[in-house]
Length: 480
Image (tube, rainbow, N blue to C red; front, top):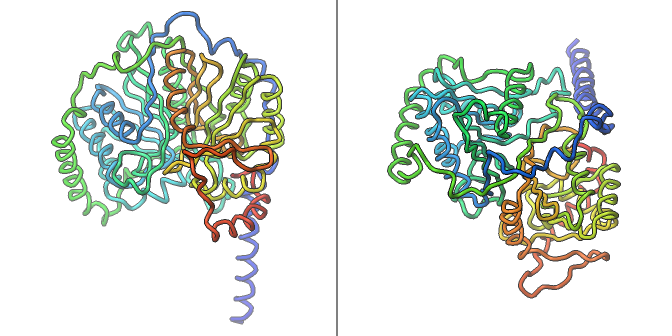
């Protein structure tokens, strides 16, 4: 009898694992094409303007600037703060931000925090500081698409957006997650370079000008996500044992805030003037993918590919890594066939921090070169996680979108398309700094030598692993 039960359980487990694998993988196998409805509503001219916008902008490039900008922005809030992010992990930068959010909530500001459900579950659940925030009457935290093991298609379809919205005044949007690897300089040995763009609405407080600012687009996008059935409130109902930990967690965050206030008093002052540090732009436009949890039409890719393909002189892509579908290879060939100068800068596999993407790049590097793009590999002291595109000397695109299949067909993504020559020059200067630590990849896969940029070899063990994973991962590269 026991043996029979064991056999039944073994088969039940096997069937469940097959169901889990099929449910997680099959809905995403076939990549979608952009639908006719979206194409018909797409207006490339809408990204440009010949008059100055109510919005001003600047690049937020360094990890320290990224942290300090977030803390300072939170202290400008009078009514409402929105933080939407892919991943939050406890640490010094996280506590800088959450102690500041609690201070804002205590002075009456409404705080809404939206986090991806998979990474939120992995990195936030069970931590008292997030319950201390979630039980504050002015703070609500939601998870997007919490994975359900009985519905394995919920495992993929992640929310990859990263932005901070302050009242009708400020927007910070880019590629940074909310923990020490991306924010601050708490651990210089374990750091990633990234990029955000800050938008300042010069007409904040003037309701009639609200629709003229890209902040209204970001607010509309967030509200649609927040109110969708994919999002669930969390950290608002602690268990009895967690309730006992909350007083200590609140006191810890309050003490942490006092330390922050004493160490960086300039960051906790309201009334900061963002005019002098930003540049005038003609227009900023938010673009995004569909927000449902299943396989998506490639809305972001369609728009950025079109804008690049219609450049007059040059298109420059800065991405952490590339994983192209057949349509994306063809799209890249269309760009290189019509634009005189097309360059792509990405991490060398010895520097990159995404093992799966590096595995795919190891296999398909030659196919990327065959598109005709001028390829440069970055050999800096840390991995680069920024995602930006320059189109001629006027248009700039910055946000969360990687040039890979996951960002194109699976996850939610947000990018800002900015029309403005001064901002374009600012972004180009940042990319130029990274390019100085890169090497040109020749058609045969070797590098054009540069005495100032030594090649960092892939460690022998990692190289051996890539030899296996670069082939193995082709089975499900549509999720990379």
